[in-house]
Amino acid sequence: MEITFEKIRAYRLHAHHLDRRLPAGELAAAAGACGVQNSPPGAWETALFNRVAGCTLAGLEEALCVRKELLQAWSYRGVPVVFPTGESGVFLSPLAALPGEGPWIYTRGVSAALDFLGMSFDQLLPLVAEAAACLDGCTVRSKEALDRTLAARVEPHLPAEKRPLWNAPSMYGAPDRQSVGGAVVSFLLRPCSFASLVVFGQRQDGSPTFTSFQSWTGRQPRQWPEGEKELVRRFLRCYGPASQSGLAAWLGCSPRQAARLWNGVAPELEPVQVAGGTRYLLACEREALAAAQPGDRSLLLLGPHDPYLDLRDRAVVLADPVLQRRVWKTVANPGAVLKDGRVIGVWQARPAKEALGISVSVWEDLQTPERGALERLAEEYAVFRQARLQHFTLEIV
Image (cartoon, rainbow, N blue to C red; front, side):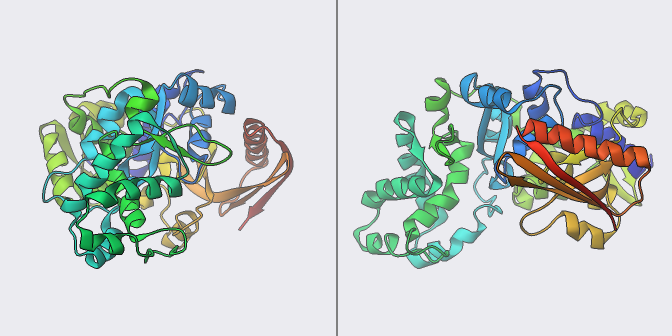
């Protein structure tokens, strides 16, 4: 079966709840589709605003920090991700690698510190995990303080000759504020997160806080007997048809770990042809893919790192590789303007006191009603951010 990009876009828009908003209050359903990245901070709020009717900042804060139906923790690719609290067995524990399945994108950089210390990853991870147990009874404010706190707890368990090296200035760019040990902790916090040893708490005065899953929720994580399979299924529902290498890129894991996870759902997969190559989808989703149609929302302003944009096959939504570089940057991605699932431009919001200035740049001509629709979307976003829209500019390039 040959699948067109148009059909894939319609299928993915529905899976991401972008073809039409979910009813008010369905935050867990929106976040649970494939998790919502929160880097840069606030990205998860914009993503759920685009997916759930009546979404407000106060409602999101309540769901995350009061009702705690949502949870933030380091997840795939080692980035902060918001997902339903009851689904840590999908978004955390399945990411834990088995022996021989490293390296991962989020720990690859630790090698310089390991070489300096003359110690291995496998020697240090258990020590950092043991130190992280202290979070069961406390909350630490700021990532820098978390690194220092855990590094200090690891130090007494190191051989005496390693301790001066552990306390030496970091080689990672902040030697006045970080030690080598603190840098090691920073890298190894991601695997600790997969064991629910560290999660994000409520922000305090603009800084993140950290504690354990047990301390934050008051209970142990729910067990998911098929958590690994479910993680791959959610990837395939949101980014299918896809490949094993696409899964590896999304997770930030090694090809060996991706192969194990992929093989777990192999009996459920069906091959299809996409742009002359073979991709796979869940067989149970074949009819949904075939029947996918454009939804009620043609134009959208997606925030930077929206889950819909978190894809390896970028040509599905934007064919021109030159234009792709304007959307997916090394740092500081802009927001993306979508039309029927295609990226047709970028946008940025510039805060000024209690106001927002929003500038949009598109590379396709738009009809007058479409231009008005984009300005209304900008106004809605400003209201969501509890600001007035100070100015709106639209440039056709």
